[in-house]
Length: 437
Ligand code: XLS
Ligand code: NI
Ligand code: NI
Image 1: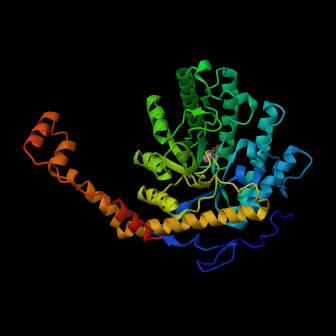
Image 2 (image 1 turned 45 degrees about the horizontal axis):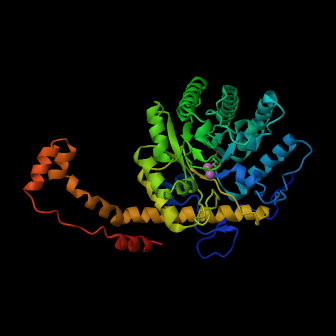
């Protein structure tokens, strides 16, 4: 049988922190028990089909830069088949259990709607067979509602309802495929759900359209018995200047306003959080404290560049803070860590795809181990708990129990000394965090 990654002959093995083998894991040890489950169960790592097998290294200044061994075949469908076989060879050799796709990543759009549906059915059949052969599972599916020029002014938020109908066809078809493949989540990222200028835009109507669309999605999932978790992935800008799903807090407000809050969770992407002017752990925390952190797009941006560079996350502090939040909420299942990341344009070999994933899998494994140690030691969490202890009893508890009023508190302040000031100990805590690395 043809192999697409001949440079990697055996599955990537765990060799431990002292290994200098670039094709080995130093920290990611799938079956190692951390706390109450294995590393693989904690991390639920997924490969992103689009960046890894479709991305061609092209950018606004240059043509495609990669020559992929799987990008061969006389028809688009044949090329899609080769790509699928390459993808499953990659998953197996890397040793990951999950993958994620957009409809257009796995299957050619075709010349019209019925060709689109036919191609999707064909490719779903092939992916199902490959899943059965390898045991690799689908973490989530999604529809690409950004690339086709018909979506220039939005999909569900387009002023033309005929465009919403096209989006409906894609979401219905992709959700059917996701269900058929046993996918446990379905993601919505609204890249063109937003606007460029209010001179031509009725924002209120567009938001109402988007809400209606999501209600139709919820109804469809119910009637077809798709039980996967529905997820919305916030992003503030790019490709559209103003995007409605700006960040976690904005999406939560939208879901509450339009009575959708019970049906969706969030898929938080690191690079999107930083584009919104937040840190990754800020948006993770907003989602998690609302019981809505469903899944994660694990990547990182470049703070010197102002766009979604989608790089493999390596920074230990960032990944540790992420895993702390995940551990504290008891895990991500059925979500996971989708590596929504790509190699740089100059990294032209298939082998580079392995290096990118290996490095970031190791980083998240270290992040997990470090976060578990931090929780076990209970020094950092205890500091935060103690900081709010005033609200655990006495005056603070009475306030939170609704037993005080503005008047009674004012009187309390009149009868007491100025509050004692306390240091936030930021530098001490930063040093403590460093001591774990
Ligand atoms: C783009 C998004 C996209 C989603 C899936 O910025 O990250 O890749 O994850 O549509
Ligand atoms: Ni993403
Ligand atoms: Ni992104």
